[in-house]
Image (cartoon, rainbow, N blue to C red; front, side):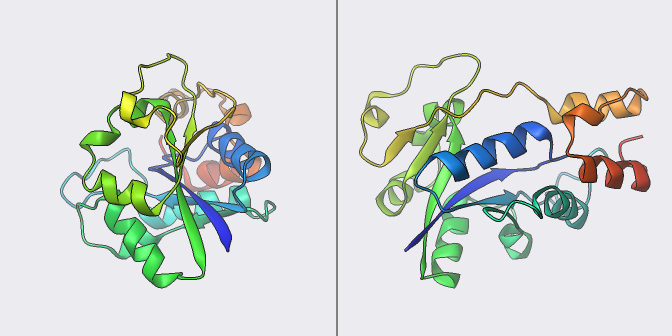
Length: 193
């Protein structure tokens, strides 16, 4: 069964740090592919700085089209909001019974994982790949040495989408932080100005 890692985020915008992490996981773990699951803009919390869903999908599509193990995923666009990861995972299991889905998260998310809705069900059905963060955090005992939780040696990327948006608005050059097709689209569409 093909193993798919699910990397969730708003990706506003999708930057080189996201790409490096996703590619590292696809190339250096037992995952066959990494799907970048785009968190939709909440209809209840419209943020002016948040690009519309289809534009964020397009950025990821352009950034990953030459990476056969990375794919944008819009599954949450069609689901009722607000949404929970457990529901997305159930939806993907139903629509792709031939695939095995794993969750990708940062160490900081694992610390609060026990507060997630249906976290036990998530752990029952899915493996979790944990990426290290800049500041080390105390992992709850129940998740230490858990057979379904795998710590990875993913590079630590300290690149912020917020900083990229602010820099574009301030007319600074952020091209090194974005895959070139992503930069072209942002520039051409005049996003974040």
